Length: 459
Image 1 (cartoon, rainbow, N blue to C red):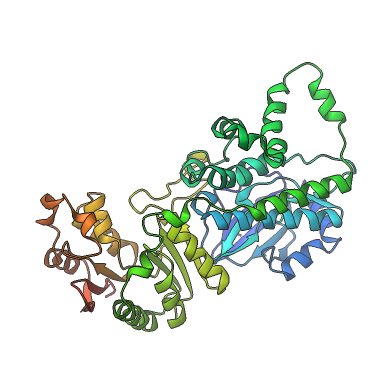
Image 2 (spheres, helix red, strand yellow; image 1 turned 90 degrees about the vertical axis):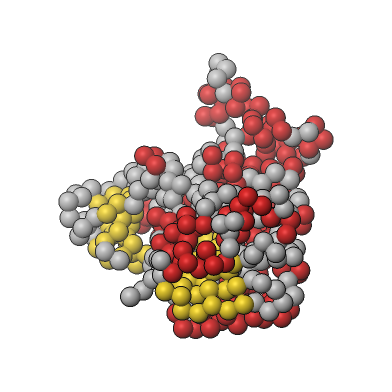
């Protein structure tokens, strides 16, 4: 086998992920094999896979050429698209946290625990969270504490509390500290009335206090001797789950574009939907990116017309919250991600490769950019040639919307930016597009001067 180890899979002595051509495989080392066999003997893995909460696996080999320490090779279906917690809307991270706790409780009933509480062990398939680390399970030791409590709080609980209690979007902070938000920093932000709430006191304030005492004489021995009954551990998981399930994000109904969908006239929406429907039926993209997806209305149209999977990208948390609800409630193959197109997720972590940049994770077969050109060009001062170059190199085909400076709904965006309008014209945009791609179709949207353009760079 030609082993191309995944850049994020190097820390676990129990094994590693690698790519063998189109196949995604997991090598299990001699160190990890006893736990793998013991856990599988309980029936836990089979049950979790059957319920859709654990990503499927199958055994394909008992060794790996060039790796004498490997004793087992598993194969997994490839994920439609890999995303990270710092790109997820609030309700996506919340759903991932609940999945983690559900698996913890079911595992404990089977005499198994998870070795860690990394949020990166969960991926989203559409709006459905799924656990992906098959080597994170090991037999439970009677009376053991939850060693991963701090990691769970930093990577799941603290980001959720930041937005739920304070109305602060967690994604930029999480992206800057990819191991999560430390408890001591969250405590410094919380007002006293929040710190005194029982769940906050026991899961945030008290652990921070204990961490400060950790270096004192005798504390390490006391922690080593501490024991927790199995029922107590399960109760801890259950209490956390109940609390997290009740959290809701503050301020998402007041973001700039959360209610934009309701302001679009019906005839305009129908025209855009018909254009997208025709495009998706003819192109039938396997992976479509909807740039500036808002609430996911046109992503849903594309899916119904033949797109297999859509990654919806928007920088407005309120609009994206509604897109996630749409994907969840209708079980759509739509993955909504909170990403700023002018400053997208870069390569991060160890050697800048552990968490890959947005584009490095897989380019789309086609894209929609129905209402983003004017935001990048006017609000963010990105020159039109750069925008056209981005769109035409990102995907071989796409539908782009052009909003002129005279558009009534976008007029506030253009106010005071007259110096940019000289270059920002549809004629200039179309001319730039034609130097890089063929224009398959263009159409004026009823009721205004907005234009839709279908481009292709295919020969």
